Image (tube, rainbow, N blue to C red; front, side):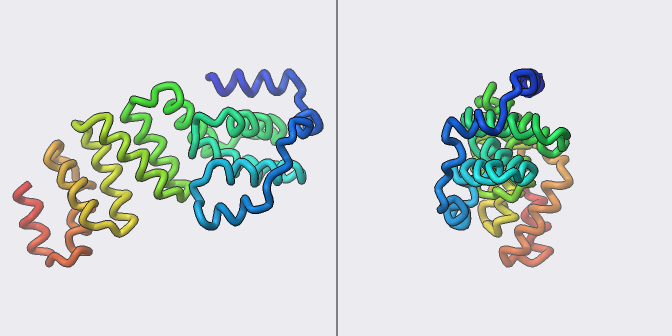
Length: 209
């Protein structure tokens, strides 16, 4: 709802590209793309790249960059502003973008909610920001050590990163807290086998949790 009102304000105010450019937002550093090759989770680099695209009239790819900038750093007012401005000019609202905005908004409003951190972690994972997703999942675990969902989210991400020992630790904790969790059991077994355990050894390990 907050985003709807922000978008409405931007539409009513008639903020134009020229007015936006007078703020110097399109003087983006050329190395932004180089930074992203080194650190794809850099919110400022995504923001700078998006501003450069917006300045060239490439609104849709700019929206994609602004979305990444905002979900990577929900405290970035500039990322939020530029995203709302570009969306107001694009004319349609992608549900996937909406999901990212809502998840980032929720963390901004309630950063101490494990559920909000898990949701943002899932959005980051879907947009291929695995390191940032892991960081959010770790925060979720720290915020609620009794949340099977938090341990599961972190365990799955560790498995995707081939950190099998850490995945085993997190998924084991998931099943200790919630034994009837088929997805956790399945991925834990896969992690044990990937680590080098035989299938019978993996099944034995899980049965003793």
